[in-house]
Image (tube, rainbow, N blue to C red):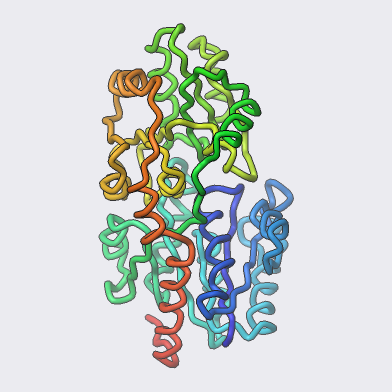
Length: 373
């Protein structure tokens, strides 16, 4: 069977990157050959996704890129598609959608894109998203990971019969053993009696972590709580300053970007996600698979997921409500077996890979896919 090339340009190992890694890893088990192609990040000088794929011994190719639109990288991608005899390229972000479309001109190769959510917190991001939406009208298939995205795609001119909904899948996180929990909490310098909350993800405005910090400042200093913040991004410096200004230095630990978040799930008692915007966040699925309760705002597909997590709660974007909920969680420990079972059945990486493999087979079965003009 001819392979599918998974194409991704990223600035770190965030939710969409972990999804792409899981998809590429499990597609062969679903009967579909796959090659991961990572567009080099010219700001970082490397591709974190490619580095992690190599660490995991995955088949990954690095496409050197010197800027936002590098014709050399597009030519390299075109050569990769030809040399591997790939009959489909699957783009996972706006830049990749542009590169994939240009590289496949004149080649018998279908174009598939997954929209992981449109973030529009800067002029550049708004421009990238506008270009991607214009291109997606010409794609053979567009996959959404969250149901609210369907209407956005239709409004952008994507034919409804080309839109497919495939939920994100994750590598399951097994329940934590007592010794693993102890070691993880020691690693992050959490005291034995503390209730540990964790926020995991890109530190960007839409994650709304400043609300979380202001909520913590409302909880008395004698309360045994600790917040772990894992991730990097444009708000790292601002959040560090806010922690100092609010007097939270002893109760909040900024961990930066981590290659492996499993120790955080082992250490935490509860995941916190006060986001203003989400699709189907992998951190919620991961916490559910680990049996951890979650406090989150009702954005994207989060309410639909937490409907299967009886130990979790939805909260308004209000710091008083968050302070009250975190205070009420002190001293509690829950193992949400129902949430874990739901994720295993509907959102595990093998389930996701099987659904994508079915989509690729459908495109092949259609023969020469008739692209929009």
